[in-house]
Image (cartoon, rainbow, N blue to C red; front, top):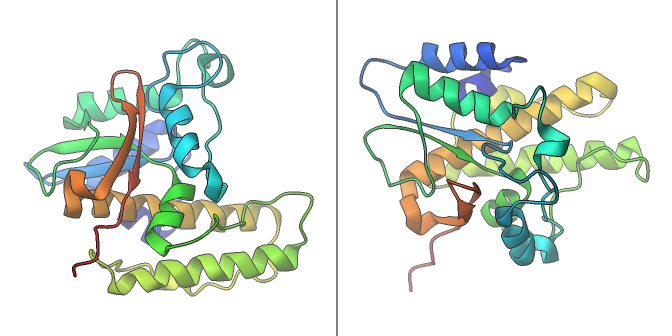
Length: 229
C-alpha cells in the first residue's frame, strides 16, 4: 500500500481499495498488504485473544489496542475487514498470513497496529500522542505530528529504507484542523502500515511479534532485530 500513501489517495470503500491494489500488481508478482483493522472477528462481545495478548506486552507503552467484537463492528452481519480479505483473495489470490515469510513468493495480507509499531520502529518509551482528544490543544497536536513526520523520515536510513514519501512527510501540520488534520493522520498511518508490510517482507518471522492466530484473529507488530555484537 506504499504507493497509495505516497500519492495521498483517499480510498473510501472496499471496492476502491481492492481496485487500487489490483492496479499495482503485475502478473505473477508477490505482494504484502498490511491492514490497520480487524481482519477476523469470531467473538460476539468482549475482545479477541490477540488483543489481550498484545495489551499484556504493550500497555506499559500506552499501546494497548481497542477491543474488537462483532457487536461493535459488524454491519448487516459482516465485518469490513473480513470482506476486504475475501475480496483480495477472490480477485487477486491474497492469503491471510501471520507471520510473513521473508521475501516469499505469493500474495499475503495481515493485520497490523501502528501504535506498538511506532514504539518498536522508533525506539520510543511511549506512543506518539497525535490522536485528537479534548484534553489537549492544537499546538500540542501539531508538534506531535511534526515529530511523527520526522520519525518516519528517519526510516530512509533503515532496513528496509522508506522511499517516496518525502512530499507528505514535509507537509506542515501547523494550522490544520478537523477534516484536514484527520486526512494527515490517516495518511501518516497508511505510510506506517506500508512500511510495516515492507519490514515484514524484508525480515520475515524473526522481525515480527505475532499475537493470536489467523483462524481467530491476529495482530503483527514489527520487532527490531538484535544489534550485532
